[in-house]
Image (cartoon, rainbow, N blue to C red):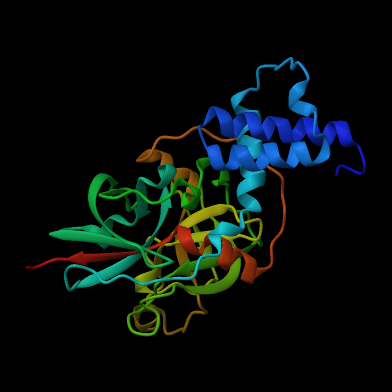
Amino acid sequence: MLNGEKEKAIEAKFKVFKYHEYNRNKRKAREAKSWIVSVDPKFFDKPKKVENIKDYEFEEYEEEEIDNYEENNITPNYEDFTFAPNTHGSGFIVGKGRFVITNHHVIKDAKKIAVRNGIGKVTGAKVAAVSKEYDLAILVLDKPYSKKFSIDHKNFVDPKPGEDVLSIGYPGIGITFEQPTITQGIVSKVFSDSEGTFLTTAAINSGNSGGPIFNLNGKLVGVSFAAIDKKKFLDETGQLPTDMGFAIKSNKIKEVFEHEKGIPVKSVKFDKASIYEKMLPSIALVVVLLDE
């Protein structure tokens, strides 16, 4: 309880209560109020001077609560698609659960598109916007996911050379077609802002296209889009390259999905298993029907 500082603890929790009350989240507001009453039963009997709480303060409290939100740990239940897909890629949920970001080449020429998130919920999708230059696409969902599964724009950060990263996505069909696969590596090289890309040693295969790349703070550093063609590289150079994948910097998402840079949030490092579990509901399998 903030090292025994009862009043500060109650004040902080009261701001959380006001945030959820403002957003009409009755259940979370009720939980915050119950906590306050358990510490000070007469707290709400006293007259309150409520200061205006700025939006960025709300965002900070929301981030702290989401980081500790155990309801993300949901038992997966994989629903079937309404059509047999020809091809697939990966993606992730943004925009308070209303959109999914993926690569443009994943959905190019699609007749039908559907999305299933990491815990199995299926919904149809349509293309809302694309950037051919950065190979990005925004899909609008027929049935939005819960906004708690959305990756907020304030968690988009720039990649740094040498930084440990994790790629989560769907590199193949069969045993990897339901739950996404996680691979690890580092950021090997960051290219200029005009190019908007970086290299990573995290394994990236064709089905990973459009999937997220996180650092160990659980922040989005990029979007997978290609792996080096080893055979082509060998044919052209006579050398076999080490594993290397390309990714688009997360800040390039603003080219097709406008957002402002968010405020800095607390840097908390997670172990790799925790990041996978935390992000599982936010990861998307994007399936496409090219020919009916």
